[in-house]
Image 1 (cartoon, helix red, strand yellow):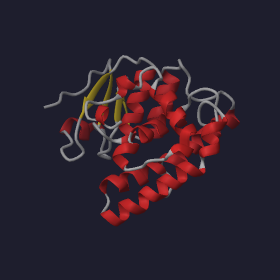
Image 2: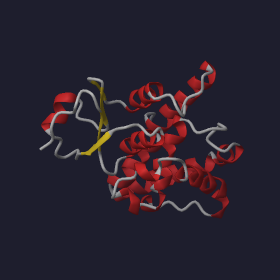
Image 3: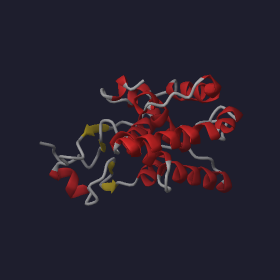
Image 4: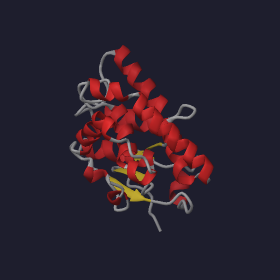
Length: 209
């Protein structure tokens, strides 16, 4: 049975294999945030978590007596609360662009996160269609992966934080991009080599790649 989080600590309730949870774990490890990470299950959400988060969603972050449970809100909060290294630009135009990309990849209709969920949890026909759509979308953006070291950026941002968990899962998603996608593979390796990425992996996720 879980205990309620210490008000003086930063506690993340996370699913062991889910994209959003992985993204938040990556941020926290990359910024070397002192934290407690507690793995819980969507199917058996503990009462302690339900009391904190009535939406019954993961990840759920508890920090300074405050509870956050939306991916974008959690990511931006952590970036502002622990500002080094920064993961959003200072310029408001560039920042808005990055926020829009995060929305496009994680929340919009037919976004990459929803496609991954369909591949893993949909029926055979749904999974095949989602796999084809995600594969095509990645290849369509190939020039952007080749243009700069990170996605439309010279330094890593929250956009890359969101993309990394998808690229780490390509094998289990049944997606093979082929030789023409070398820029995406090079980009993925840059992310996987970043400070904290491997520390962000759960025991289950280590076998994905």
